[in-house]
Length: 362
Ligand code: PEP
Ligand code: MN
Image 1 (cartoon, protein in one colour):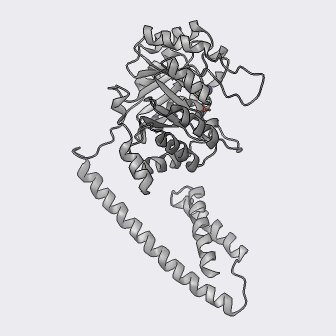
Image 2 (image 1 turned 135 degrees about the vertical axis):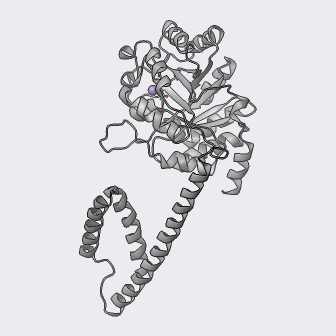
Image 3 (image 1 turned 90 degrees about the vertical axis):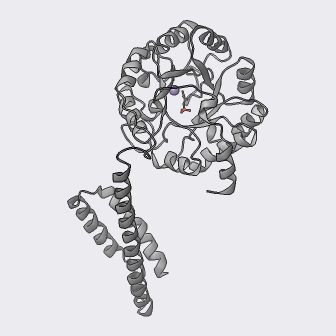
C-alpha cells in the first residue's frame, strides 16, 4: 500500500463513531429527490419501521442530465429533513455539489453528506467541497465517478481527508457505459474491490438502485453486494414511485423495501474462529499452489516466445502474425467452453498474455 494511503487508512474513523447499527445490511433509504414535505415525511415514517434502515436520504439539488427537468427543491427541503430528524430516529443525508450546498447543510444540521457520481469526476468541485468542509466534523460518503476510473474516486477521498474529514465511506453506484446492457450502470466489482484493497478501513456501501436502474434488479444486486462482504446499502425509496419526479423506474415503495431487506442473507466478514476455518485454509493452500503453477507455466511460455522471437528476427519475419493469433484465440475460446470456463474471460486472459508475448519479441 502506498505511504499516503497507509496513513489515510489508519486515520479513517471507525463507522461505529458515526452510525449505530446492529443489523446487516444497514441501509440508507429515501427518495431520489425530495419533492414535497408530505412525500418526505410519509416515506420516512414508513422507513423507520425497518430495523435495517438507519439513514434517510433525499436529493435536494439534483444533477440532471438534461435541462428543463426537475432539478430539486433546493434549500426549502432542508426544513423537511429537520422534521424527519425530530419525528423519526433516522439520520439524514443529502447530496452536495458545491461549497454553497455544504454551508447550507452544515447550517441546517444535515447529519451526513454525499458527493454524487457527476461531482466525483471533477477535481475542481471536489476541492471546493473539501475546502468548504475544513474544520467540520461530518461524515462524507463519496460515490464512485461516472466513468470506471479508480484514480478519481481515490482522489476525491484523499482531498476530503486532506481537509480533515475522517468519517469517510465510499458508495459503489456502478459505471456508465455506451454498451447496451440490462443494467443502467455497469457494476465492475473489481474497482470497488481494488479500492477496498488499497483502503481496507474505508466502509463500502452499495447503491443497487443506480447500478440496476430498474426495480427488479435491486434485490439481486443487493445480495451480490452482501455476498462480497459489503454491509451498507443505499436504496431509493418513494411513497409513490410511478409518480416520482426523478429516477421513477428504479424507486420502490417503503413496504417493498422492508420485505426485500428481510429476504437478503448477510454473510460475516470473519473466518477466524469458525468451524469451517480449517477447510477454507486448506482450499486457499490449494488455490495458492495452482497460482504458483500458473506463474511457472507463464514463465515457461515466455521463454519459448523469446526463442521464436529470435528466429523471427534472424529471418526477417514480422513479430505479429495475425492469422496465428486468430487461430490461437479461437482454439482457446472453444476449449474454454469444454472446460466450463467463461469464453470471454479466457479471451481477456489470452489477450494479456499475447500482448506480453509480442512485447517480449520486440
Ligand atoms: C442519486 O443518488 O440520486 C444520484 C444522483 O446518484 P449518482 O450520483 O450515483 O448518479
Ligand atoms: Mn437517483
